[in-house]
Length: 132
Image (cartoon, rainbow, N blue to C red; front, top):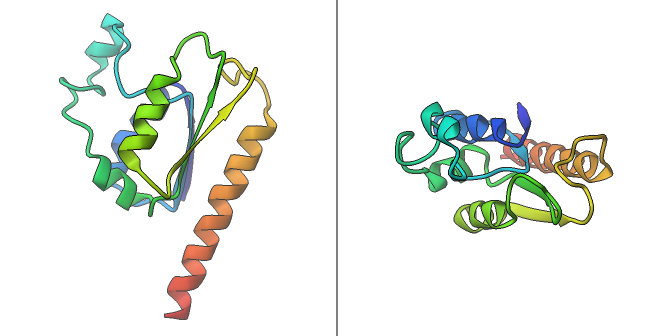
């Protein structure tokens, strides 16, 4: 299974990856903090109430097959948020920064390309497992 999530709901997905194995994930406009929003803090997904992020488990659970997408003009989530996530996950996870996509409200070629990249990587990993 491959997961595709956008914005703050993507954090539910990231928490899922701390415990559940998936073939990959595309995270669009993801953040790792509550951005100072009291309602987000109460949701319990962000540290400290949600516990510290388990970046190693997240990376392992997705086999490192994680693509983050973010736009340079996102009005809600600063670019530093996904940059931090990408750095914490490390390679082969990757952050793709786009120009002029805002919060990815509409259809996007970048999302399509990210999904294809994650699916291709998942299929290649599955084929390697079959050959062993």
